[in-house]
Length: 284
Ligand code: SF4
Image: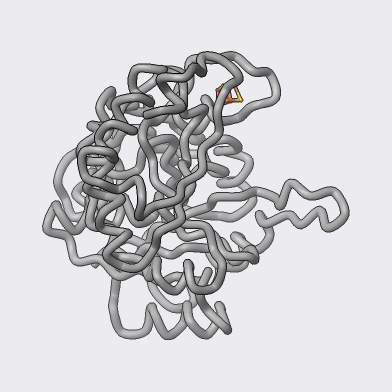
């Protein structure tokens, strides 16, 4: 069994879309998956203990979305909390622990050094975590796991991330309790693409998602949005770089939504660059 733990307990809550995509990929690959969502837990420590009790996982994956809260008055830093979660997981099971997620992909080795996990995955986690699971169960070498950071003797070794040009993710969105996140005022996200080819000096997005624009199939994005609508989730936020880059993909996404008649049933928010933006995109 693969256990995936959402370690993000910030409030208001953010539904763990990346973890859900990884869970869907593992499920699709025939791996039994258990999600332990600390973001919805009243008592995260107890939820972690209960979730790990008696399941004897092959691998535990920890998603790490935020290294800090990006808010000067509170200045919360979450690496120490992640260290605490790693220690607790080791108390309850012997499985190797792998950290992934956006914050991990940005800070990588300093995070691994501080939290004491066995592995980390930089970039897209869907295929990588499935490959790592296979390696741990005796199929293939660690060198074949995209984006994997692992120890070779006393040194960390880093495999190149895969950055697939057409990311494929699960569209059912039924492995995380998105409806409860929504009811609690949380943000529910979806992706229309990954990566960014711009060079804004203040931005970490290209570190976490690559420097190439990698576009999803617009109809698969619409399938995913319809899945969330069926759960009563009708306000969404894109987890992308600027939506209107590239312009043609933005129009294609809007047209896919329009073909399904989603326009009147859905409100969604996106980051946009000032240009390109014109009447045709506004109308779409
Ligand atoms: S365009 Fe947006 S996502 Fe891309 S580098 Fe600039 S700020 Fe980051």
